[in-house]
Amino acid sequence: MRIGAVIVVIWLVLGVVAAFERGYFKNTGDASCAEAGTVIVTTIAGPLNWMGVNPKITCDVPDVPEPSE
Image 1 (cartoon, rainbow, N blue to C red):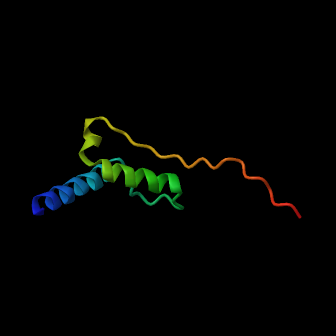
Image 2 (cartoon, helix red, strand yellow; image 1 turned 45 degrees about the vertical axis):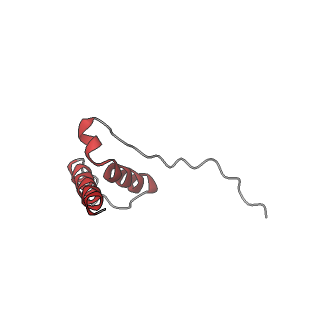
Image 3 (tube, one colour; image 1 turned 60 degrees about the vertical axis):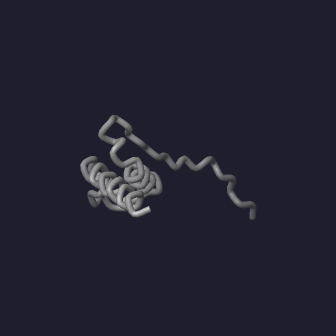
């Protein structure tokens, strides 16, 4: 059980390093859900990022009807 926890922690640390290398932690003003999602997925993907996986998240909101008066 401890070995599994250590592996998970190492995996997530490598994911944070990969997100940092891609510049996802630069202060660019307001963060969107797409940017947050990309950072989270990149962190979870961890070492897969160095093997060419490039996760991107989009938050396309469909046209929402305007409320009636």
